[in-house]
Image (cartoon, rainbow, N blue to C red; front, side):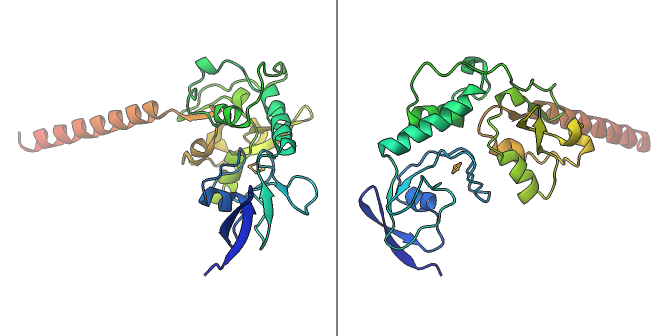
Length: 238
Ligand code: FES
């Protein structure tokens, strides 16, 4: 059983458990810390840096999602230094992201939109880079639009860490990291089982399911089976 320790979050004394991260301890008492690469189903990667906090006696701004709590730790989640840092990190992400939210299927349920509101980034956003990956043609069950990808790595990690596959990977494309399939091959050719885990963890509109097609194909299949059974029964009792 995990034992309790005392920490302070924004000068409030909080009970935390040995082995918890700062983010888990903060979540447990309702203190929100911004996040993007973090997902509760995954090991923390500490890559987006949006969950940076200040800790008394620590150098730099540690990532709350991957830093374990320690007895007596004093954490500040909203100092001017932390806020400036998060805004800078978020600006870099937004630089590579389209601005046309209204036309995006994730408009209103997009974690990036929620982050912009939480971090309080100033308008106008930085001018978008022209160096964005193109949208991919629609897949059989998934839509993949990597121009919306924020490179949080959740899809890559869940495919590898949880599903034990490597259907989605980070690739080096013209000096930058992009998400895609190994050697740009179709999903069917790289071991994808269409489990949908990557879609579930995508925070933006880059990966979306296309279940209408799946349901239509299932309905057509069931209808064909029923027609065949009806034909057999009719034949037998003729
Ligand atoms: Fe902690 Fe991304 S959420 S580094």
